Amino acid sequence: MSNVILPPEWRIREDKVTPETVFNNRRDFLKTLGFAGLGIAGALNASPAWATGKMIDVLARLSNGKWPAITSLKANASFTADRPISNEKSALTYNNFYEFTMVKEGVWKLMDRFKTQPWKVEVTGLVKNPAIYDIEELIRKMPVEERIYRHRCVETWAMVVPWAGFPLSELIKKVEPQSEANYVRFVSFHQPDAAPEQAKNPDLPWPYKEGLTIDEAMNELTFMVTGIYGHQLPPQHGAPLRLVTPWKYGFKSIKSITRIEFLETRPATFWNTLIPKEYGFESNVDPNIPHPRWSQRREKMIGTGEVYATQKYNGYGKWVADLYE
Ligand SMILES: Nc1nc2c(c(=O)[nH]1)N[C@H]1C(S)=C(S)[C@@H](COP(=O)(O)O)O[C@H]1N2
Ligand SMILES: [Mo]
Image 1 (cartoon, rainbow, N blue to C red):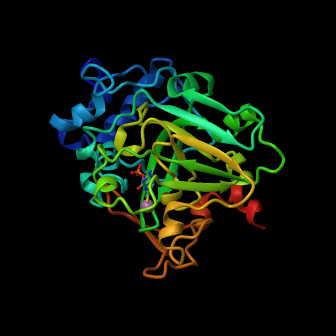
Image 2 (cartoon, rainbow, N blue to C red):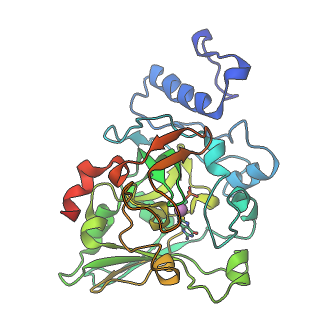
């Protein structure tokens, strides 16, 4: 915010400034300047004020001391928040990324050796036009937009996040699946030199894998994410490309994708292989289906600790319920 001089009505008392109010004011401010509909960060490239020391390094690894903003990012008005957006700091410092550590608060501190550039994404299997994309080339070809989604971990914590990305269906249209392609599988990376848990636990079914039916993959909600809070995706959130399926538990939203495969039969996935009784292939959010070890009736927002009743399909039934009837 330091490079923007705010008119008086935008000034808020220091003690009232949370990352979230800064974030929302930034958006309102850009609107008053005529950037209506522009995404959250607009042209601002600086690291947020709360980021210090190591976090600045994490955010700025691709540029010189800045957290690269996504330029001309348009918000998709179909996907807005019905509860407060989680503040940036909470989201960026509380992650699940088992390749690095099981300690959620520690994931972001372990990114030093994780190389997310250069990065290639291979699209392969039962498609007419298989391709290997350089991530930057792929992003240039795709209609990147911003969507605010709820995100619900199977462990009952939740957040509301403005993601930037493109619908997976746009990529699927380019590669043209063959008629036998019933499933899509996503494969993450294998870098034991960079990811401590991959080195410590070599017998786990690395790389992390996930899968969807082709109809789920083509659904309007299914989002390939390249950014968060108007900026490039930080490594702890799965840079440079991750999946987000907001009506499913978070473990389906695989991070740091290197390969997308179109298959005839249902693929094995990481958690379903390890503990099939606890982590099903479908795993749609459902308050009425408890996890074998805990209830799924409620969820707790990271950052604020607010508790909400869990909604079936995480509130996205309008988009996806017909897939399961
Ligand atoms: N490659 C990979 N992707 C992953 C995971 C992981 O451990 N490895 N964890 C999943 C789980 S359990 C959740 S809840 C979300 C967390 O995403 P976030 O850290 O961006 O909030 O990522 C999912 N994607
Ligand atoms: Mo999760």
